[in-house]
Amino acid sequence: MGIKFVTFSLMKKIAFFFLVVLATASAFGQNCKNYHVVATGETLYRISRIYGLTIAEIQALNPGLVTTVKLGERICLPNSVKPNQSEVIEPKPTQDNPPSQSNTDPPVIQAGSKKDSYTIALMLPFSTYKMNNDSLDERSVKLRNVAINMYRGAMMAQEELQNRNVNATVHLFDVGSSVEAGKRAVERCEEISADLVIGPLFKDPIQEVAKWVEKRNSHLVVPVKMSNKILLSTDHMSKAYPGNNSQWYYLSGFAKQEFPNSIIVGAYAKGKDDFSSEAAMSGFLAQGGDSLQVFDISQGCVKLYDFIKKQNKHVVVLDMTSDEKTGASLTTALTGLNVNFVGGESNVSETRVENGTKNIGTRNIMLDYYNLDNLKWIAEYRKEFQSEPDEFSAIMHDIVLYYGTGLQLFGTDVGKHLNEIDQTGLIALGFEFFKTGPESGYENAYVNVVQKMNGRWRLKNNLK
Image (cartoon, rainbow, N blue to C red):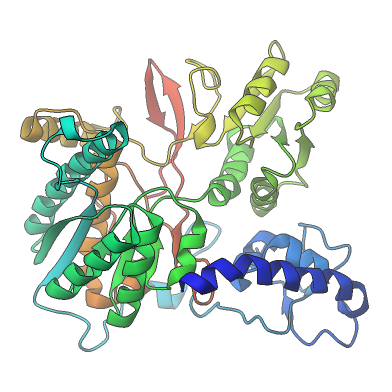
């Protein structure tokens, strides 16, 4: 997979070039032999995910196509791509998307997929080959602390799994960041016949373990923030940390509901935040909004400022800037105007989301100190480990509890039922998976929307 991963970008650029050249001649003519018919509720962003394409690639084959697609519209696709609808995990039922009969039926467990007991391999960077912190560099010290807190969270979850009569044993392994560490990790997985692997925390060893889980028909969980490109390694993999595009697809629709009487616009830096902008526009349309107006502020905020000054209504700005300097200039430029900000996770800071305002943002890992169940768990953690839990403790607790429960429900087929697992007892995460491509893994698209009140972050939405 390593060679294929390296050459993928180049081949994709070459293919995209020819798509652009041939677009006008073949998009709507007789040469278009592969097309998608827009169904109810679909957006261009959703369609792009179904086929594993980018919005730009689809638009190159369909001149004049905008993000607002119409019911029944035919969209030309490359001849080689096929829909992976049969493999895409269905979204959870909502008021606008009632459950189908198949969603309400009990899950079918394939013969032989359930076992009397399961093994979970937890792979963390403890650096145990060095005796103490005095012999570690600063980075290794930080990684060891992350590993310790993740381990503690996992142990809390294992106790809860035992209370649920889940017969699963967590095996702990020290795995670093190298390819060699990944190969040694594979040997450990083989020794214990791991049904589920959580970690490692780095790309190179993950790719080594990914080869093993695909052959072994096990499942690999990436527990930290990482590019979705890692999911190209195998479809026996899921990423617990939501991607930036999924955040903005949800956030833009949430903003429309949260500020129903306001004008909502987007701010982004062209070239850096294009995908976030496309995802936000699609999410806005999916919630019944008109076309979302966005402003490129890479060269300054004058146009956005002038637009806001002319409005008679309150304005909400979706701050999609990923660069801290650009984001700071946006905040400064709009100071004094009647504006609220909706920011992504990187923008949730003291300067952007202030106490007592309606400014909102996202925190993918959210320990809600206003939630009584969370406070009870935090108290138990403090008592058990004489320390304060952090986001790493919380994320590993939720991953082990969620996937461990999944093993009990679906056996070794847990990777095929990721949206059907009971979420009771989760502390900081929610799970809402979608398949990122026909032969690639699953991304968690769940988003925690937060607001700061009385000095603490408070959860505003509850999708669980």
